[in-house]
Image 1: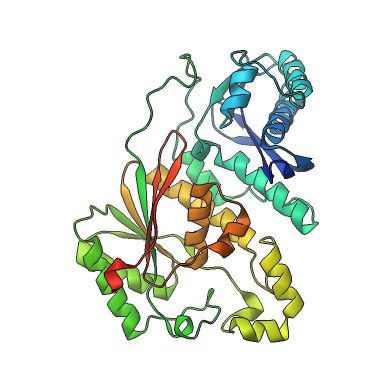
Image 2: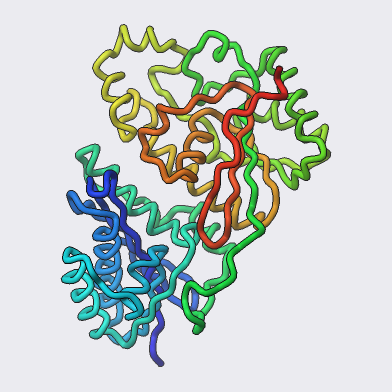
Length: 378
């Protein structure tokens, strides 16, 4: 019996061209079991070159598992899928030798087909590519750590892996019913009043914070919120509780939506950190892969928040979900939706008690509808 494998592949570049990385996953088509994963920085390259390199890495890994296997390649790059399927010409000289290398690898397998998938269904390979780029930026080895990732395993279990669609790729009707993510930053806390780093410190709301939460609950009444997903930290849970009570909506808790662990900087002001660790602060501001002493980098936060988002989208397709969280996780979700670079985190401002909205379409795009809306607090 011929074995069937699924290759999920991706690549990316921070700069286009810029520092690039690839990611690839091989699964058993019958069971969905993860058989191999590859994450590798590839120096300076364009997005398209990195995507082709991800494809080559995935096909190479599949050949190493079973050279006689029939392989379905799934990618969110329409360009690569259409070119490898023979429907689009390859005009760029940098991609021609890569496409030829991929064709040689495909010819050595039992048969290869190419399927375009929306980005949300290629999240594992995308995460590996980003880990490769983060590792290159930090000057360390790649640490995918996804083989035993329970979040990814559960997210994968939420979806059935279908057979290849024989219809022409790209001609399906567009998705018109998005999953709407309404993003709520928790209300005011004693630390936010003093503008101190408040990461995993489990502080509660001030009385003003409680009133802000009640105000946003009144604002959201009648909005058709289907479910609330909250960070486990007290300030977010208390904010979510006010909304849940007003709307009579169930609240789920997702640990991945917690705030950044600021380590040694917890509870300090920016000025205090500048005085004690000026060089560390400069490195942190320059590179999202750098963590405060004993803490967590923004790059690490982005990975876990992306996993939480994918899990929410898998559980609640086409619904309106209120996410109650913190500054960094909400900024990460907005950055991902805008396809903005990691440095965009430093270019957004979110007030306590503010609302932002993202529409997530199952066929790929995410659209930001609003950012830092505080109309209910005036």
